[in-house]
Length: 404
Ligand SMILES: C[S@@+](CC[C@H](N)C(=O)[O-])C[C@H]1O[C@@H](n2cnc3c(N)ncnc32)[C@H](O)[C@@H]1O
Image (tube, rainbow, N blue to C red; front, side, top):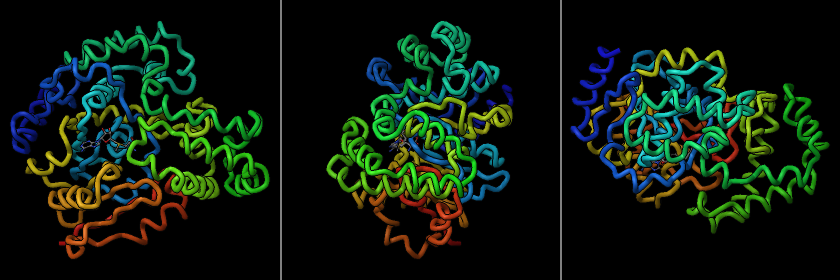
């Protein structure tokens, strides 16, 4: 292990100025030391904002076409999608996030994969059968991981130990608690109808059910009202747009639910109930069969606490693929162009760049770069039609290839 750690250290040292190095914490090679430079008292109260808010790894996988040995950039968020990209066998995935609590979240999450059994992991996160674990049991599991955390991540998690132990790591995340969308489906449908809807494995039957039983006036109205009332804490940049966004999201929901069976789309259960019960579809990154393969490749991660714009300006790393998430949604068109251009400058010829935008709000690829990239419109268009895309909130994934 220590050989791997020192190798990652060397890669990091070549690629970045000293203060951005990946650190070597015993037992886990992926921890950023940058949160160690922050004052934990400044961010200790924050709970992680994003714990998988609707981004799907399947279209990312299709778009990136990761080749063995390649180097991938990804926004870290909660690390779920990057962990699925590990299964494509890249040599390295650099995960970057500017939010220290999000980094602390990733540290505990990946330590859990590295050090726990699958049953313990499921209990700590709080999904499937593990969702019913007691707080005491979760607390005990957390305590067993304390030794793997660097000091400020430890301060953070010790501070939140009780709250997290009650809900599990997944529901500990602020955005899921604030989103509160689980309240609207029961206004429109009985528990029996909801259970039936979530359990379709056949898309033909699901389509018929959607048209004949699900898509009622009451459902559409509950959906729109719920989305008009989303907390500004999580949707601040979009509050004025909500009257426009709510019907777009409703259309997108219909589009996704008539393309992918719900038994293959965990987004639907989360969206409608705010939990993953284990009775329907599990996200791939929580499936038992992927647990060990992800764990075996964790040392290919570098986790860096930094603004990604700054990272692109300062790194000498070149990438074969980019997951820019929907970071650009918070930017003006000018800032969005700069953000995407910074990524383009760090790409190898032939590399794929991806970004997301909230439905109907795409700012487009930067005009000044139109000769250096090939926009993969056909591939983007095919993602929903072919049932690859399962996320509800977004435009089709934006994909471009860097020309030679
Ligand atoms: C844009 S949010 C969206 C969440 C995402 N849709 C998901 O499913 O997880 C993803 C992450 O981007 C991070 N982020 C936002 N702006 C950033 C920046 N300039 N540099 C690095 N990370 C950033 C946030 O802290 C958050 O963890």
